[in-house]
Image (cartoon, rainbow, N blue to C red):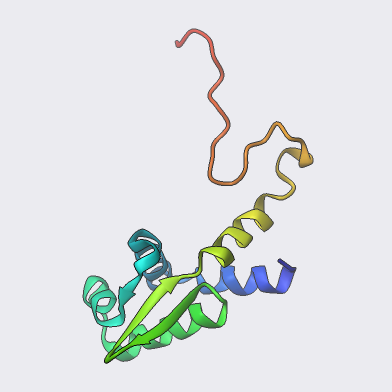
Length: 113
């Protein structure tokens, strides 16, 4: 991922409603959600959700497909993972001691105070 693509994705996620929509889609998994179901979950007017989904789509974070009369929206996990990898590629100065993005380093062992 290049800098401009990362900035576009981060910009798309920098709005509370878009972040909430993206997180719902990530939670929904590979099946995604029908636009109407996502709209109901977020309690948004249709035009507002459309504008937010257009921003996420332009950043490559969501994809959609028509299924009959329904448009189903899915998180683009490849783009999400590429963003996470981009943000963490220099973690711990590039040393292997640092776990990738989704894992936290283990807590130090020893007595608790």
